[in-house]
Amino acid sequence: MNFFIYILFCGSTLLLAFLLLVNPQKVNTKGNLWLGMFVFSLFLLTVEEALEISHHTINETLLSFITLACFVVAPVFFLSVCYFIAPERKWKKTNFLHFGFAFVMLLSVLLSMIENAPDNDDTSPELKKTISLVFNLICCTQLFLYVVVSYRKIVNHRKHIRLYSSSVENIDLKWLQYIGIGVVLMASVWALEILLGLSETNVLFDTLSNIAYLFGILLIAYHAMKQKEIYPFSDIEKNEILEIVSEIEMPVENRKKLVSDDKLEEIKNALMQLIATEKPYLDCELSLVKLAQQMNLSTHLLSYTINTGFDENFYQFINRYRIDEAKKMVLDPQMGHLNLVGIAFAVGFNSKTAFNTAFKKATGQTPSEFKKSTLLPDPVL
Image 1 (cartoon, rainbow, N blue to C red):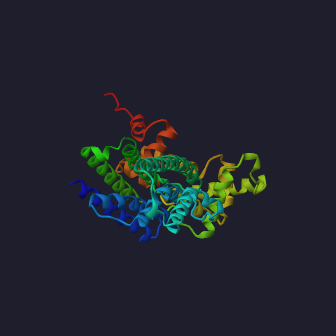
Image 2: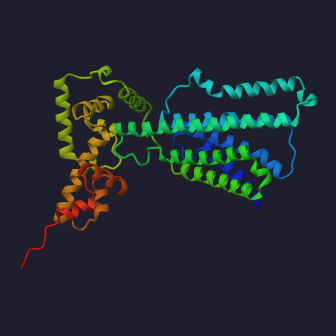
Image 3: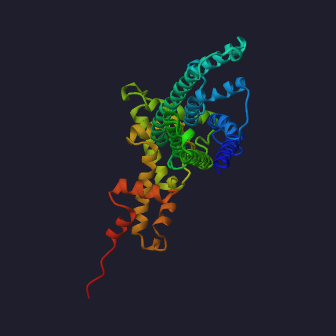
């Protein structure tokens, strides 16, 4: 049973790596390439134990190359997060530093091959076990640290997407955060195995740990397959958006003034006129790029107008109009045939949760509480 669970885990990991690397939906191409390499690294880490469980032997040199996956799995996961968040980012020489430890270990393996060290290895088993323990603990620690840093980058990403999207549920990388949870789950079990050595002496723990690994990879697979394209724009539009994101990180006094005050007021008036007459906020797929095209403005200038002229980001600006429209529909007797979910979709929200959250933040009440508070009492006869 234990062998079957572990083989199922290995097979699931290899299949998921294949799907991410092939990426049949062609979404978030660079991010999925790195995520696929991360999952393939996990697969390599499972190969050694799978062979041990099945009582197969493996060449020591090949095994040394396989174990190098321990030292790349954490930075590869981090880089996948980086490329999901900024697909147009350029590769820098400093990125090689993430793989410094792996390069050192690779050099060590190559030197041992040249010197034919395996044939003359007189290292005691106890020392080998201690070295293996230290290396595995370094890998676990590295993985935890990279997941924490990746989580912080995802949190910042959630703030940034409000600059250009009116609906963030499908692009907020929450699914990637859940993948991070799956990674932490597997790393925690791995750390317990290393520190306590229970897998070698406790069959129950060994079985439970393999179940945890299988659950972790299934969690990763489920959320990876739910992802949507984060930047469904042209390369030029992507670069403009990334420029907006970079600029918003600057102190206010260091940001460029794109237009004069008079021109800013003119664009504001044109934007409010468009909002009032065409109600673009009713489009649940409305983005900063799409609205800029309707106004014949650059994405950068429209973002500057909303941030500076209205002191709001794009998400806040659009959803403020959606909430106002929703309140009107709740009060309109002709809209009595729509329930609150129907109203949410009618005004441009693409989920009940997003509608309830935005409504509560804007009014201090949930939509149902607002509806109850506005109902007229029956007249007293």
